[in-house]
Each structure stands twice: as C-alpha cells, then as structure tokens.
Length: 81
Image (cartoon, rainbow, N blue to C red; front, side):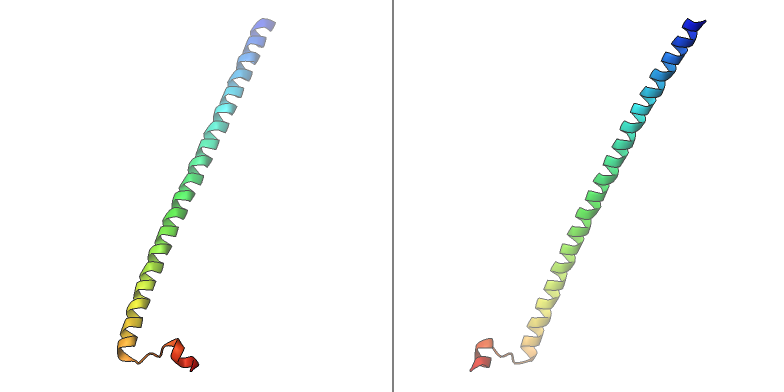
C-alpha cells in the first residue's frame, strides 16, 4: 500500500515538474516571438519615417526650384557686401 502511494507521489511530482518546465519554455518562446515582432514593427516604422522624410525633402526641393524661378534669390556672399 505504501509502495503504491510512493509511486503515485513520485509520478505526480515528475509529471508536475515536467509540465512546469514545458510551460516555462513555452512562455519564453512566446515572449521571444512577441519581442521579435516588436523589432519588425520598429524596422517598418523606421523605413516609413525615412520614406516620409525623403518625400518631404523632394517636395522641399521642388518648392525651392519653383520659388527660385519666380523670385530673385540673393546669394549669401552678396548680402555681406
């Protein structure tokens, strides 16, 4: 009788420990995947920001070219004289 209880207790402890170890590894893997997705989102945001800045720069260049065609622009050297 005591031998059967001991075996049941041992098997229960092994099962509980195994499930706990599996759960911890599973949780770590989920956390790793979540963090990796965050890195991917950050990379995408950075690319979008750079694209937007490039578009803004191009628009600024176009505006400058248009304004310089319409208005007379003094060079910085001629301002100091």
